[in-house]
Length: 343
Ligand code: DAH
Image 1 (cartoon, helix red, strand yellow):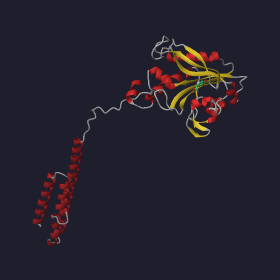
Image 2 (cartoon, protein in one colour; image 1 turned 60 degrees about the vertical axis):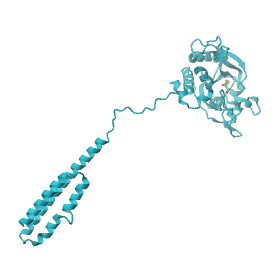
Image 3 (cartoon, helix red, strand yellow; image 1 turned 120 degrees about the vertical axis):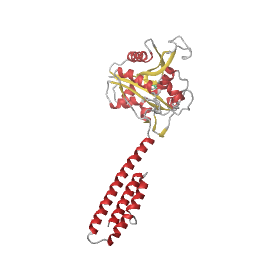
Image 4 (tube, protein in one colour; image 1 turned 30 degrees about the vertical axis):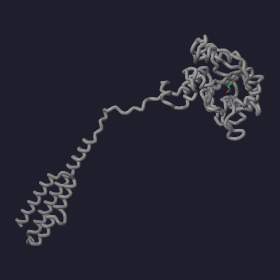
């Protein structure tokens, strides 16, 4: 029995020492198998207990269990120590230097067309107008018919567009929103309508099959041409500067009577003539007129009681003039070198 005790003691000491030296979890597990496995010395000691006397056997059994428990505790402690060490090693080797500056994607800028649309709308919102919207896929009836452009009318030639069917098309102007608003709301009306319009024009420096317009419409009792002129004068001053003057030239639009085109004094030379205005001193910015009585009655508004004015501003043309852009295609190509200039 004392032999066995000694053997057990030695076994335990060896185990504790080797465990202490184990470098990693794999080595530790190998030690567990070596010492405590079925073919290990601890099992061997248990097996050899048959040679002991019945009195010695329980004592020896107790001792073996105690040694096994000690060994297990050592194993567990070492295991957690190794785990912590491994984790620390990993943390140390995988540190990220969060003080390094990140890669910046750069901040964008509002598109020049959006800017011009917002600025123009802002002026009219301040004058008490409300924003109205209409669909880009429009009925022939709204885009042409009710605006007094019947089939075969020459004005349709200059506004050829993309057709979904005989009577559904991509709107060529924002003017159909006038009809939609007047059909649904009763005067007094003061609306502004920004939006995309389409024409089957070939893309070149001054034409695009998609472009933007801003429509204006005012309908009330006693609205006169004087109100139209006053409003446009105010608009021109606010958008292009205090000294800006406007000029009306007679024109024809089927849905207004009388109709005019409106010029403003050149934003570059102020009216004396330069390259921007091609020596004219004036730049055309919009079409306008008094809403035709037939258009009013088409929408159920009595032209004997009410009158109104309307106007349509070309957004691209205004933006090109303001920023000195010489090719309409720049707006749609999304080239950051172009867009960056509008920060
Ligand atoms: N819709 C016209 C166009 O695209 C522009 C226009 C002219 C709108 C006169 C109007 C207006 O409201 O009164 O050419």
